[in-house]
Amino acid sequence: MEQAARQVAEDRLTDVEVAAECGVTDRTLYRWKKREEFIARVNTMVQAYSARVLGSGIASRVRRVETLKLLPDKMLSVSTRCTRLGIPLPSARAEYAYNISLTRAINSSFFFHL
Image 1 (cartoon, rainbow, N blue to C red):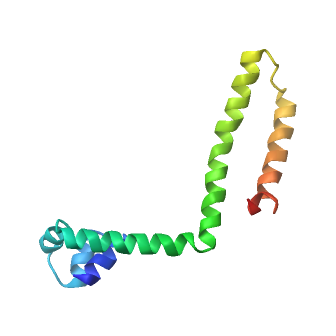
Image 2 (image 1 turned 90 degrees about the horizontal axis):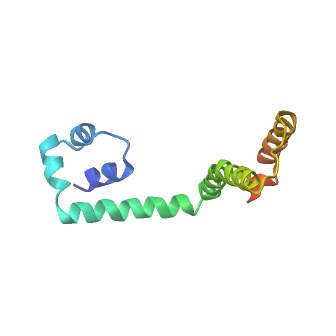
């Protein structure tokens, strides 16, 4: 059951594959997954994996990706405010230059040390 809990926590295999690896039927695995102690063990393992990942270099990459995901919303917010206040938006040429400089900023080492 411990091996099954580990594989369920890793979430790399289907339930049928996990059952086969552990030498049980998929019905048995299904029953195990309903048990409180199995659920608790899987959750403990998932938390341990998460703690290890967040303690590694992956965590800083996760933060960078999250920051990048916010950029389009921020740009839309600025654009909307400008429109509401009657401030003209940049021309297509200026917008292109802005996008190029934003891309360079994203790719720069400064940006990746957030």
